[in-house]
Image (cartoon, rainbow, N blue to C red; front, side, top):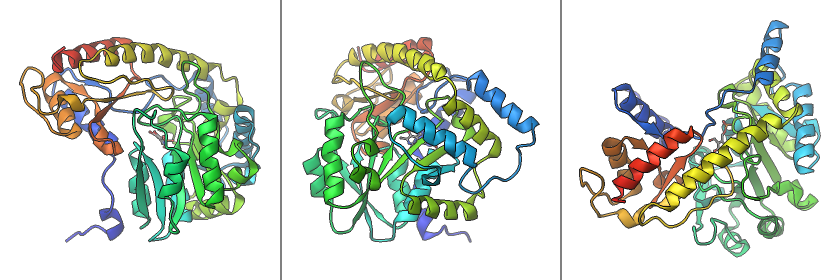
Length: 398
Ligand code: PLP
């Protein structure tokens, strides 16, 4: 009889992937489902990136690569990172993995022991707490609020750090809230990180998706002291519409890079060779394609926010980055919803009834540590967004 390991018993399946699977299953049964669950651009990967991948395949670049990635691809990544953020890394401080999720897993596995604490401001990306728990370390959730712009303050962070704290996980722009920390806010957190001498994992996967004048600051750009304690995570999935290629990377102190490479050498051997060449083409060529996609996201964002902010009983939401609207539906709990008039007490139940009755798929805020909230990804065509918002409005009695 199969009994799963203690490590696996500590984690749950990815809630966003589960929500997407449920929506797809209902759609496959013939329902007209509008799916806003998945955090991925709906665009095709730009042509010049696909061409580079084909060229790599046709010239025999189809073998194992060094475990931590190809030197020329690392060089391209650190050069692009310096161009975009002003922060210089050596290629030896870069490890390329099979997506940023894999990168985060590697970094956590390299740093954490059972009993260590990891401070995670909430709402947080679904995988953080589970990937920490997988190592036997303890996630310490630090609540932030919509009223405070979803930003964790220096005092709050300082108060959450104990002798057992090894790491703080930051994510700006954020999934799910879209919130972008200002340079000043980050600098205050950086001081705490340095004073308390803990590591910081800065997940910057949405760094290129900013709107309405929001400005991105890379955490390691704050000072040499901050950089020495920071592991920066990024990748090609979101900015270049390359979710299926599975390429992400870490930039950080060489001993951590070496540890991640050691792990990867036993774990996956290397990230996909062809995808590495595709990622090289993405980061080193003209960034015009990123800007074009960003502009399209900006238009969709305007439409999504106009609709969301007009929903009855829903407080305003105004995300500066990523491609999510994260809004509070808590005022509708306990009241009749949609045509069936069913009621709910949690975001999980809200999303279930919304999917079954109105065929609109959102992700519950419960998965992100934010009860009462739901996440709508607007990385989809405007016609779908419009129809989805109409259905939501009538579901909420508007
Ligand atoms: N970090 C955040 C905040 C994300 O939202 C995601 C994807 O949803 C990832 C990391 C992982 O991206 P990937 O593994 O596709 O590179």
